[in-house]
Image 1 (cartoon, rainbow, N blue to C red):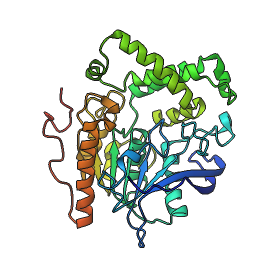
Image 2: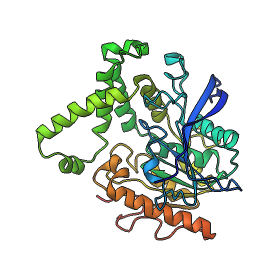
Image 3: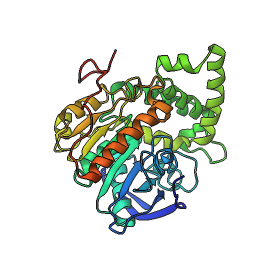
Amino acid sequence: MAQTSPVQTCQLGDLRLESGTVVPNVRMTYITHGTMNPERSNAILSIHGLRGNRDAQSFLAGPGRALDTDRYFVVQPDTLGVASTDPNATTSPTRSGMNMSFPRFTLRDMVNAEHRLVTECLNVRHLVAVTGISMGGNASMQWAVSHPDFMDAVIPVVPMAQASRQDAFIWELARQAIMLDPKWRDGAYSADDPPRRGVGVGINIQNAFGFSAEGFAELFRDRAAVDRFVATTSEQLGASTDARDWVYRTWAIVDHDIAAPPPFNGDLRAAARSIHARLLLIPNCFDQLHAPGAGGVMEVAANAPNAKIADIDDTLGHSGNNSPRGVTVITAEVRDLLQRIADGRPGFSGPRFPRHWSRADRCPG
């Protein structure tokens, strides 16, 4: 197991968002795995997804794992707006005490807060890598554009470079399910009576796209098994996810576009060309939630100066990142890239695009 720190807190004070609004007294909690070297040059930032928290990426960190803690110091923060009900996470609308008065934020705001954590509280000026899964993968792609020289490698797992129209549709429908729960009360619900049913249904709407059709067939023996899964997970999701915080983070997801701000002005190819770090993209071609084509992943890979795609190729779709196959692919690819960086070798091992793809710009099938 990795050597894991107790929960630590970075006092960021005022956090100015790109909208100009200031969030006061931001306290960003985080954990670390492994040991920082004396030169402070072996740090890796690992960013969790939409419903995760600081612990969600821990399955990748440890001796011999993708993020080998015998060599690297792995930082896992509770990111801006974290939707977990963990009371130690203080960067969200609910834990800040601002509730629906909390200003909307973007993934660039999330990256800004993470950059301040790394530089101001950990005194790290350069990272070996930034990685993340799902929403954390989206944020790591934003890191590649916002701070192109701050890290040697960026490793987004099941990410998007920009939100697709389908994603906007999915998350708007999920938010409506939450907001139609009578207990939503325009977001002014009390801590002891949240809209748990709406949250459970809303997140399961998202989950309908979280597996591929093949994945559903493998996971569930019959219709009764599907019904049991819906009932059980809806209850569990409603109890473990804060409605306000989840809604805010989905707003950030559907506004996500690494090419949105100047100087790119919507030109995704230009944004990709601005990336200096080695970019190891790990999508899943069975992913219906963050589809690699619609989410701009393949366009970025084709235009970034130093990029590779490694396909998870798992029928669990978006959820395949932590399947046995997904962990195997991620571990092999990440360890190989980090070793090349440590050895001072350029580029990547193997082909830039998976051999099983019929064309470099298209997933199989």
